[in-house]
Amino acid sequence: MHSPSLPPDIFEEVIRHLRFEHLSLSACSLVCRTWVYPARRHLFYSLQVPEARSDLLQFLSTTPEVSQHIKELRLGHDNPLVKSRHRLNPSSLRRLLQCLPSLRSLSINAGFWEPSMTNDIPSEALPLNFPLLHSLSLTRVIIGGGTYGGIFGIRYSLLRLLALFPSLKQVHLLHTWVGDDSHLAQVSNEGLSSLDLALEKLVIHSQQSPGSLLNFFQVTRCFREIHQLDISCPEAGLVQPLHDFLIEAGSRITNLRLDLTCAVHWVMAENVRFDEVDLSPCSSLKTLHLCLGLGEQAGWHDVWYWNAVAHILTTATTSIQSLVFEVSVHHRSQNLKTFKAIDWMRVDDVISRFSTLKNFVIHIQTDPTENQGQVHSEELKEAFRARFPSVPSEIFH
Image (cartoon, rainbow, N blue to C red; front, side):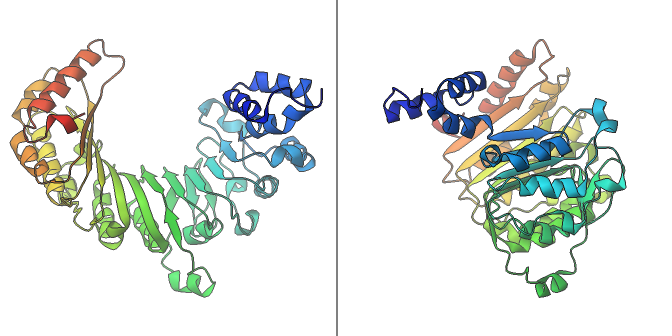
């Protein structure tokens, strides 16, 4: 059979319907040649491999009719049981990327690769540019340094790395260390100062070093726009770099997701407090999403924590349209008692300042192993609702 008996529009609708049914698509492509090309678009859209194996490289280099359809590449894995079996070869990485001319999304998770100097990626191991790549995700990677433990490194400065991908829209850095990019004057001489990225989403989670975060924020001067910033603050020392970054780039951020669930662990640590975070430079902010903790510690600790949240809210622009509280709850007997002791009136007064608020959303995150988790969650949500009388019921979700 050489052509489908279905009209073209219905044929395309069937293809879309079967895009996640790989066995069905494969069967159709074996029966009818006309199904081969559209089926490949979905069958080979995403590729996930633990390493750049030679047999895989051989296959991709000799079958461009397959490799041209690969849009997503996920390299690495999250399985600690295979830690000693895989490592990254720089030349293999370069060959792999060169085999994928249509690549849109690249994700590298180096968390469980074998510690080895072969994990250290020299600059010549990456292609000169990748104009079509829109999304870059790096997990447990050292940028601008060498290997350390099980983490692999890229001997590029972050600025040089980003310059390889001029069409980037999303950048995710998870447990990733960023080396010093203070030599920006030298970089400019290399012709990289023209890097002008308009990011839709920037995610920075679990940065263990204030210096690493500061180094990253230096590079963001090249980001013309950051539509959404998603950042966690697990360490007290990260508050000052974040504060300085918001002064520098806050006016370019329209959506901010700030994860403060771990901040409760370092209250008063080294006299650094997260209520020093100032959102006033974020003059274009439309959506503020705060990830918060309740019941991590006892008594006054939670009271201080939520008063600090109120303080952060006082610094936000009054033109916010959407406010989201994502609350992580640990089920302890004192939770509701502590909850009632918090000065909610202050938080409510702050929220009443947002005259353009259209959505106020409460998400309660509970322990799924807790038998009474759902009941507890609903009880807390009702308690939240009762403590924000200034919020109109029609925008409360």
